[in-house]
Image 1 (cartoon, rainbow, N blue to C red):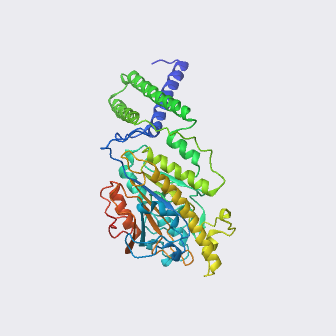
Image 2: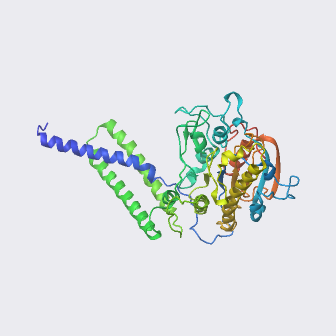
Image 3: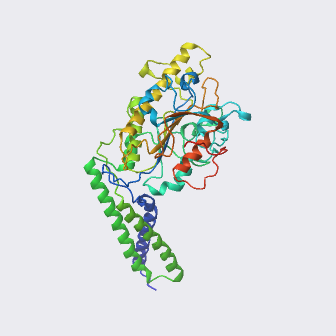
Length: 459
């Protein structure tokens, strides 16, 4: 045994460095993981007649319900209906629209928990599960439908899902009558205790999806990251070969398990390189714009790009947290939205809420029209190959009701849905709609979701 203290310290330092590098690689595995989608064609490529486009799914949330009398179409269920004043901005995409009445979210009803309808409306919208009344860290909701689907098909794209917001990001503190802010500011829930934080900054969203810098810099940055990944893996293999002869049987088994993980990372990198990261011909957004409508449209643009490049097929966008008291000086309203919804049947206040409802639908219309104008790989529009839910967990904001929610479904799901109609459901859970959407997305074995009682017929 060598008793040279200096030599022992050097060897210990080498072992520590080697272990540190291995630990670094283990941590790097998550960011190296870029699952492939082999059928993806380059952005802008001409679609062949046989090309098949994937179906996309998104959920857009607006707070505080609507004025019901101004929301619902005129006429009977079916295709012969007239859009209401509030929905009139959607006329250009009417053929891709289903206005669905009769959907309920009973999990948001007061019950024994009393006040807190805004928190319950937001926290149950995509889960259908009654939330725990707490403003502490012991929050408890359910898994949201976007995450249920992402767990099954998320591996087909670079990102399983995309979570966006045009409001604050909050996971703690009290916001509504003893309920945590987490319920109002997070649409997506990975588990009953783990909301998925949405991103409010369009620049951060873009850089996450496509990389930082100009279009030319994004190409160089990607090449450099790939070269660094390969160099790191080469080092690990050389390092492993050098130490393997010195290990006993148990340690060799550990090394073999570790190298199996390394080889898996290599395969994932190889698969990812078959599906290059898309590089849109647009500039990186500067950040959060000062105007609310610009903020919404930038986030909507991020969804269009993400769907168009098949970077993800599942997204959520929270326009504003439930109970939002935002003012709308853009349309001359200085009063807060939430305050106005408690109109006490005063016509002036009702008319102002109608204008806010109309303003939100105009933002939706811009997004859907852009989806309609964007061609997919099969020659159809991106909207045709999507399912976009727009709505609120509150129905009448004045009375805090959660039955007959204002729900729109845009898109034909790749031709599988019967769009261009007014559908009247027979007072069923909102989650019944989500089950049908999960089926169209290719999620299998989802027999129930939250308080669902069956599928909603959309064909």
